Length: 281
Image 1 (cartoon, rainbow, N blue to C red):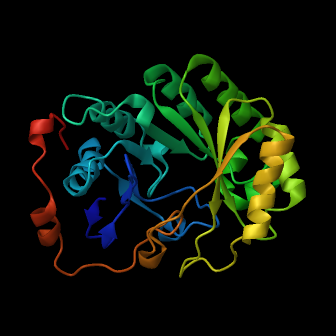
Image 2 (cartoon, rainbow, N blue to C red):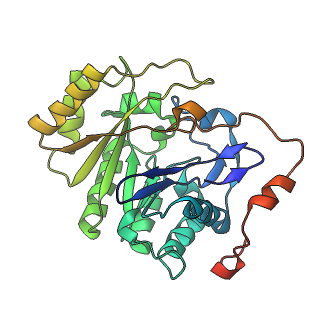
Image 3 (cartoon, rainbow, N blue to C red):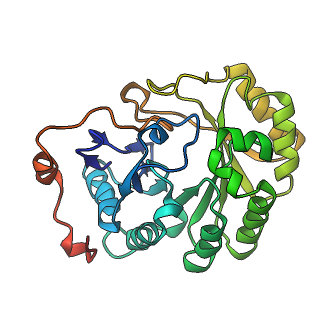
């Protein structure tokens, strides 16, 4: 929930429930990955957040509601800001926030060297792979950065992570009408992940004002896709409940909407002094 004068909004928000709240945090301003369905990529890469700035998002959210889960799924590619992300995640499990590592999820489009590093540095956290396609060819079209990391090698890295870590691996899959949501795609994905200890999250596509080439899959297609994965391939598959569309704060919608003319004065008035957390900018 970081309020930034360059973004003009809090990058993420708490998802409340009966016994939990999940906070989606950003790790960068902008992003280099250029995922074709994501508004964040249209603003380019503006810079990394420090570990302190990442933690500030948790500080602000905790004022609103107790936070139990944190997911690094806001702006940016967390593995491209690896040191700050891991440092912030470890601090979240410390004396100030007392989060369980198993309630922290770090997402990536599939930067294999960093997945290997995370396995060594902080294997207690959960890993999320932004997959979005069941084949290398289609994935390279949807996620241009995937061209650098072949799907076969990415899946091998996931297998390795699952072997060494007891934490979950989530597979994120944005459902795009007539692009990656057919029965053929469902079977391809099922065959790719069959027998693996993963949780597949099907994410309804959120339309944005800056990316207009895609449409959301219909509910019939979405639940048919889920049924194939669950019943044919025995893969745990959920459909994500989306929030924040009305403020373009849902998955894939975060982007610069305007710039403030008064610089960082307003931001400074909002930020809590966090020196006591032992994290320095």
